[in-house]
Every structure is written in C-alpha cells, then in structure tokens.
Image 1 (cartoon, helix red, strand yellow):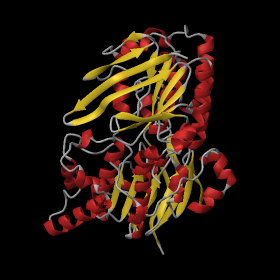
Image 2 (cartoon, one colour):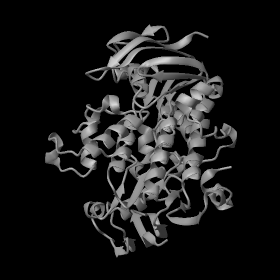
Image 3 (cartoon, chains in turn blue, brown):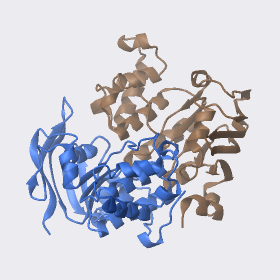
Image 4 (cartoon, rainbow over the protein chains, first blue to last red):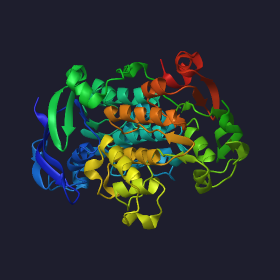
Length: 254
Length: 243
C-alpha cells in the first residue's frame, strides 16, 4: 500500500524557537498510527500541521499524492482530514444531538446525513441516550465520546486524534480504543497522539516516537511495546498493558 | 488518626441532574486517599464544593475541625487547603519560573526583585529540571502544551506548604515516565505530613500510591477500602473498572 499521508522534513514553530525540527513520517492507508513522546516534544504540533491549523515554515505535507501545505483547514476538511483537538470542542450550551448535527453542517444531502448520523449513534450510543442534554452538562469522558461520534458524521478519510483517552474512566477508555480499531476496520486512517502510551500502542498498527521535534523511531506498535529501551525512556516501568476489549464486546458507559 | 476533611450529606443538583447526591466521606490526616468513579459520577463537583468553587444545595463540609461550608476558595487556600484542576490553572502571563515563585507564597511585587529566597530558588530550579520544564522556564506559561501545564501546576503545588492537597486527574496528559516522578513527590510530601485526596483514572497509579480508595458512583460513595479490596469488589468492577 502507498502511504496516504507523508510528512517530509517539516519544521514548524509558534514564534520563537522551532517546535518541529524536521519531522519525517509516513502513514499507510487504513492503519492506526500512534505518536508517543515526552511532554512538549511536538506531538500536537504535528497534528496541527496536517490539519492546517499551523503552517510549516519548511517541509511538505502530502495527502493522497497531493501537496496540501498551502490549503486552508477548511479545504483539508473537505479532502477528508478531520482533527479532534485535545481541548474540549463541543458547544456546551447546545444539546448533544445538535452538536452531532453540527458535524454534518456541510452536508446538503439529507439521506446521506441520516445514514451517517445512524452510523455515529451505533458506534456511540450516548448520542441517543443523552441526546437532549446540554453537551456542557456531560462529564469529560462523555463529551469525548460525542466528539468522536461527530467526526463520523463527516465520513473522514484521515482522523487526527489528540489524546482521545484523556480524562476517561477505565471503561470508557476501553470503549474509545476499541472504537479506534473500528474506525480503521471501516477503512479510515487514524493518526493519534497518546500519553497513555501503552494503551495507544496496543490499539495501533504502527508507533512513532517523537522527541525534541524529531521522529526518533518508527516501528510496529507491538515491537515498541516490547522494546525495553522504549519502555525505560517513554513508557515507564511500573504499568502493564491494560486489556483492550474487542469492539463486539464493548458496552456503552453512562 | 483524626479526620482532616469530612463531607456530610452533601447534595448538588444541576438542572435535573443530581451530580452529588447526599454524599458523605472523610479523609484522615496523613493519608493519600483516592477518589475514583466513572465519568459523570460527581468527583469534580465534589472537589468544587469542598474547595469553595461551588455552593452545595445541602450538606456540610468540615476542614481541620471547622465548619467551612460555603467558604470562598481564597480563604480555604490560606487555611491550608490547596488543589489542582483537570484543565490546569496556571498564570498564563507569567513565565514558568514566575509561576513557581508565586506559588511559593511571594507577593506579586517581589516577582521581579531578588528577594526570592535562595532555598526557594533552588527548590524551583530542581522541580523544573525534574519535570523537564527547565528548558522552557523563561517562556510564558501560555506557551506550554497541555501536559506541560499539568506538570507546572503540580510543581506549583509542591512549592506551597498546604495541609491538604486535592489533585484532580494529575496524570492526565503526562508522559508515563514523569508520572513516576509525580508519584515519588506525592510520597515525599506525604511523609512530611501533607494529606492528599486524589481523583484519578490511572489505576496503576492509584493502586500503587493510595490507601484508602473511595469509589463514587451516581453522586455518592459506594465503597471505601484498601486498594487490594477495591480492585476485587464486584460493585466496583461493574460500575467502574469493567471486566
């Protein structure tokens, strides 16, 4: 398979001091890739250069053989690149259902919208069970599930997830990691950033280690998990890989 | 050991949702107590009530033998009750280093003078180094990433000398290697006599560090006990940990 996304020698900054210092990474279509690394190493910044929230100073980002460096975030969205940021991005004063509908804001075809809403609800039943509540009254973990559901309404090709498991209780965390597998099984490509690195790598085909703005290591998720040097430097010694439940056996959490 | 903090029959309703529903719990002085529970079970709401950020609809909060129900956060802070937030609250317009100076109890005007004591300076420097914030110590805190903000907020708590610290998901967004550093600091400060109440979803962190563990579900405690007991309790497995 040809890579769907190629990040080539990307240098980026928010002003003084480069955060990314020549990042190289390619992502194969239909796979899940997990970016791990110390705090402040530039993981979220990589995602921003792909979705267009930040333009690289140098280097290129290529999506499906098209250089997208100069495209606006909206143009990239229309190409099928969706970014779920780390901060909570739901509209707190709107209902859960209206938030989900906002995901389909660009869709004119009602039938298509309906089908996608159904897909989103099937993957994340909370959208139906709590449909009328204000999104802001949901807990952090519940909001994350609605955010993931909202991405599905856009039927994305490439999904960028910035720490999807942050703030989630163990049960919801299992649901979210299982959902990431489901996304990939439906043909979507996922690039995620996770500090919960063991769970992130376990749910991923590939893993990449970012440190000080450079990709240091790329290997299969499983082999990074087994590498003692990676464990010592990035995963910590004390915790074990929590079990990842298969999508069929997951249940919705309240 | 006596209770440093006790919560009696506290209730808080948002619209139609009983976020906290007649909850009672206590934290003994000198412990590292965990408060765990599913998303939406009321942990943060309870924290907000204890620390004065929210007013309870009913119930009472006692801290160090005094009724502090409805006290404001600043007053509670001065009485020795300190906390962190899920979305770290730091001073974005101050540099990373200045954030620590302020947390060390120095007034605003002393920030830019040499009156910050040598001991505090050294302590701040060593905390910055341990949490790998030394390279960014002169940046405005607003420029930090989410995880770095959490680390800064945690370091700031370590600069102050409270009696009770409430940590709201301290490890969220923090690299696993640094989580172990956090754990060591909590133990050290606890050995010096500081009591901790920690909301956390990282179960390996909780099980290694905390005793007792209080489990909240639907706005009230359903179980409290030693970590090994909690881990095997059917109610807790069902409500929180999953199979």
